[in-house]
Length: 252
Image 1 (cartoon, rainbow, N blue to C red):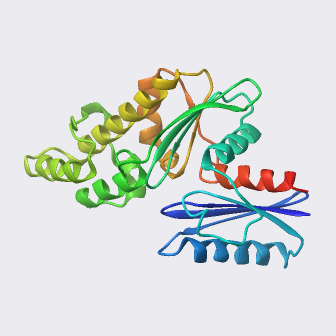
Image 2: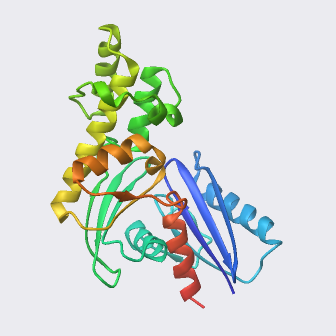
């Protein structure tokens, strides 16, 4: 039996196929249709695996309701927990920042979810927030970390996407260097997410997942705010899909 996990997020859709010792993964933009994104993920994974047929599928993420081809739909909380524990067994706290929301999940010693907090009411501190602010700075979002100047962090007072964009334009107009503004943005995101973590209690082993975890500047700021190292694996964008695939494997 082949297990597939699909994590259809608001901005990116990720998929993992597990076939014995073989593993395949795909990431694509979600686009306008979560259903189509799920179908494209499955087609790509099947092609990589050589035309896999006997498949169990678990879907998670923002688009899990729209995708109708799965055996089961599971919440992101459960899937991220399962995926992270498989990669980093000692983890007791998961910070996940995606395209449109951020969440913090606390785990017990057995790796089970005991509590979580989620920010899904606004885009503050999410991938979308970073995209908008990077656009205001005139650089690619992937270049933010390499462009920051931590020696002179600018103070960013607003975490609202609209107001932060205006604030950045004002700082640029007043002559503040881009690197300083970027460092300030990273600090603001770190503070906001650290406050979410503190609501549940700061654990000893913190895993950072989601696309934003690829930004080393956010990792640095979050670690400094929490006073703990944060662990980021090569699978940081795929932990939800991995967890879903492992749950699909359990279906037998």
